[in-house]
Amino acid sequence: EPQHLACNEAFPAALAISRHGRGAIIPAPVELNVQVSVDAKHLILEGVAAHGPVVATSWDSEGLLLVTGSGVTLECSGASPVDGRWHCAPLPGAKLPLAMGGKPFSGAVAVTRVGRQVGSSAPTLRAAVLFPGEASVTIFSRAGHAAAAWLPTGEVRVAAPAVAASFASAGEHLLLTAADGSVMQMMMADGTVSEAAIGGNYGHAWKGACRLQSGGLARLALSTSTSGVSEAKFILG
Image 1 (cartoon, rainbow, N blue to C red):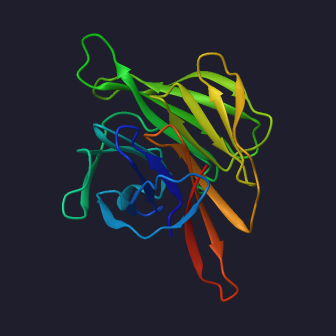
Image 2 (image 1 turned 60 degrees about the horizontal axis):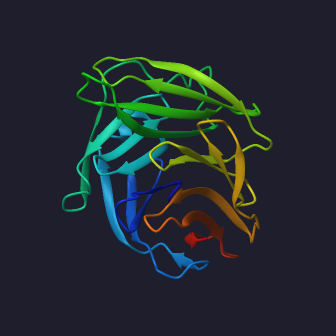
């Protein structure tokens, strides 16, 4: 079942991904404030499973960017999969420090590309990590050269814990999804926070949010029927 949601702000669709590298591309409906059952073009991310469960993803014109629970960062090149398959490969360099003493990482992570440094052939990467039990977001950056390390660059306190995080606007905004489905938007320039979507549990387990090409917000939730069957919901607004 899908656990992460990524939007390509240059393409009218979103991508829902499971922890183990299966997913679906969901065309974005025009109408806002609607719920859509996830029934779209399915895909497989090749080369991901060996590095642990996926904990973060972002999607842009260069391809897909992933972080796994072991801290490995992977890149899936190309704007979209080919014949339902998207080949992914780990980036050389240090892992994002997500170590939990041998336990699976249970916090929230966001990752994105933020531009290229002069003389570098690859973009700089940015990650936001909400470690479990901490009321803050730790920001990490990774330079765009081979074998670069992830370095902490700042920390911002948050008013409430988040179950998911994702970047928008080329890394300028951080979207924080709470357990009740509400979404707060943090400006990376100064740490100010505003409300992007109101909460309302509706019996859902909220999994994340992302900013669509239209500028609207998409959210991913799972609902469980009385018979115990889980259904993914793609919610606009």
